[in-house]
Length: 53
Picture 1 (cartoon, rainbow, N blue to C red):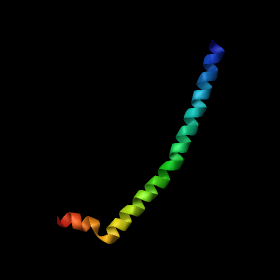
Picture 2 (cartoon, rainbow, N blue to C red):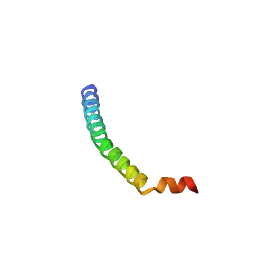
Picture 3 (cartoon, rainbow, N blue to C red):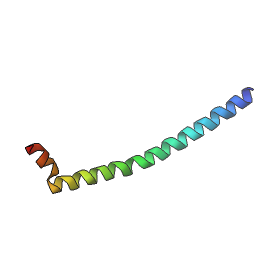
Picture 4 (cartoon, rainbow, N blue to C red):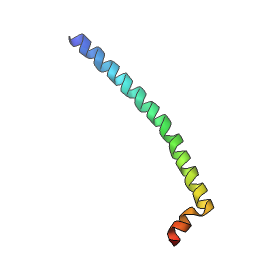
């Protein structure tokens, strides 16, 4: 049973590391897209309209 537990722990660690790396690889792209949409909205003057209201 100890060997099986060690194998399961190693597999869980590898899966967790791969998922974390995958999420971190996705995060920057989403942040860049959000920044671009915000900059475009600022150029269009949407936030200024909200401030006037």
